[in-house]
Length: 118
Image (tube, rainbow, N blue to C red):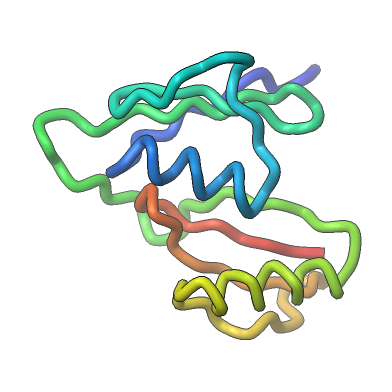
């Protein structure tokens, strides 16, 4: 079985798209223009994340434990992403050893939490 897609409701589709492209290498569809209401991104395995703007200007609020994870090839790669995020002004904790991984969590512009781990 192969996971095909995940739909995420977000506060800002364009900011979330740009963020996921910049820090995690997700790709938008060939020739796709930015759309404030809907977008699709794919990873290296062609799994799709769809981004949909919350209705009626409602602020998106995910449950406390909800998150998506981006596994990295090494602890150094986790450290590099962490440092880039800090340098770009994001509030991120220093990576630490949790559940057998070198990891950190933070809230991204879309309103959901991301885990970066190795």
